[in-house]
Image 1 (cartoon, rainbow, N blue to C red):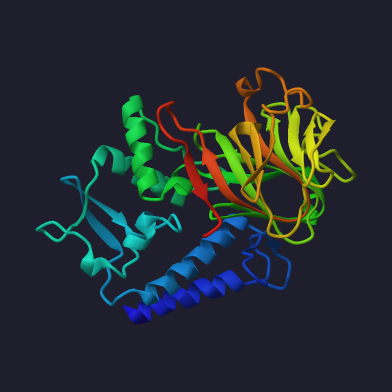
Image 2: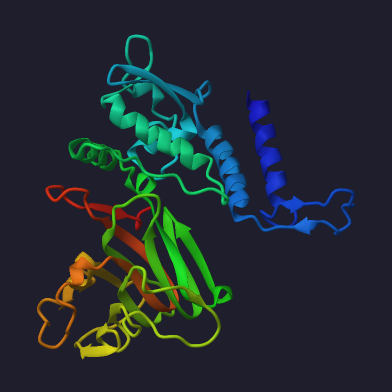
Length: 358
């Protein structure tokens, strides 16, 4: 088994490193290997190759005899799942619990199956979603997060997902560039690392993927050389992509957008500026936008409230009726450290996803 494991690892690394670093090669039929083939930078394939090699590294740390197929007793119902599927959400309780290091201490039934004290009608849809995620391709629509006709069952599902720390994987968010020049920015767009580094003015949006739970609050940490920092919200459907050279307006300056302008020190709504005192942007600063623009906090201190500033900062009275998504503009290094999703029902607390410790 150890020989086969090392062989798989070596094959994955050789294939992954071919052509100078995670770039697979495609050849036309009949062409030689003398540089006449087509070279394609396939990000999805690269990630899969890296993931494969990483899994093999992780496998070497597991106890000898650790099975890759987990047999589970979920609330009295039997099911089986690959270990890498169950542990695919990095930083989650399930990823830690079933890493292989704690198998001897986990609860089992009398037949030796791992016991999970959850109903199968909640747990199985989560597993099926993770299976669908594992075989996503660029040519197919993304996997859809589980939904239930019963509001009560939906609440129970979200509660279970949150308990296991699986929210970033089951209800994912992603970063997308919508203004600026792509060649000037490096971006990590998916959990667990939502970060950007750009040398020119760019605008990015945070979007949900494969589910209907909107983002209601989020936090940004400033890295190095941050300039012209504008952090706020844009209206969905009105703020279209314009990836092209040349200067452009930032969030809060463009129509259908509003933001906290950390560089100028104030609030912006469609170009209208309301000055605030004491705002500074430096490395390590964390700016939090709460409840779709109702409040802004800097390093935990409230600095602005659109409700308190109604006399000077005029937002549409029916602002919360608009579909809003997070957006931020500027230069330098940025990291999304927290995302808060709207609950499905009014009597459930919003779910907070932390990216800062992953």
